[in-house]
Image (cartoon, rainbow over the protein chains, first blue to last red):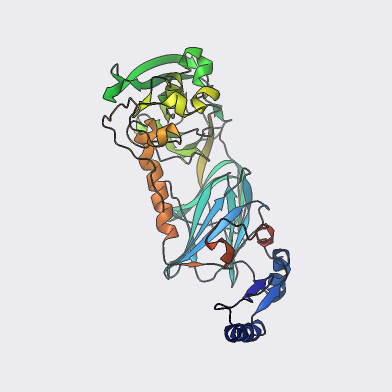
Length: 371
Length: 93
């Protein structure tokens, strides 16, 4: 226990008998074992170092707010990391724990994957952390689980993922990589993947969500706007008449998987989207893919065939701000006019809705990694 | 605890136009129902929140330091205005 600043010194009731009792109790408390005092919060850190109090989860990524939360259920320890800042981080987290098998739990997809890239000592587990701004990750440490047959304390290069699949350790690589297993075996791979493909030209159908003619019916009607061969800039920069439009944008493009320099039957595409403004879903040949983290919008397209053409569709949603801004004086809530109640509809400009930025397909391949 | 706030009715309401009943007279965003375009993607985000909440409610918390900030029990008082503990959370050398 650490008292910072003054200790409590005022009894209640405020009579001499109770004040004496408080003074006596505080004197005994402040001289007890494991009781410390610091004049200010600024002295706390040096005091903690002096008495050997260390964090269970130590990270050296940045001095910014990278937080961890630990929940202990008996069978599993959960460590939740959240990068609560505008900067991305990449470093190692040293977790004080032993006798556990680490997994990564993906809260977007529900998947639970054995973590293979970590270093263990008798008392600690060192795991790599790479988090975009506002990204979170769950590290689950399972007691009584079967540890992986092979771990890789040291890896470098263009490794997209490293997982166990059908009993084999497989890496998705997009360039040269080096992996060293726990028993010292080093494996090096070169990728035969071609250069990334920039998906720059799209067809766009915008669902324009607006009121039915009878505004008091509170019915949504949708008008479609179709634009072909567009680039990924805001809707109102494609056409200024789209300023008041809000709703859903369906973006469609096609790509053909290019040839690899060497035969590869395990081709993957790493789809990298720009930051998602609101929400988005991605479809490959009409099949919906996994949910996307809007702050790290990357999807792996599996099982692609070289030479085959695929259709890629990205659906994005917007808020209704632009539509309400355009009709703020006709929009009522129990008789009160939105344009008068909310100044932002007059002062804020129309928002630049859409899938905005670059979309890149980085090519990779799956390789089996020996232990 | 996570609250979907506001989640108003999508029915008609007295002297109210599309997009429907809006709490606090458009003072705050957003309204969350099927009139909101992103509603059709909402399962992705609710499942994400649900999974995180499940993890963060498992077992008991393990904390390194607990603070008794007695002044802030009844009013908004900042009692620890330093980032020194965050800065200290570095890997042991």
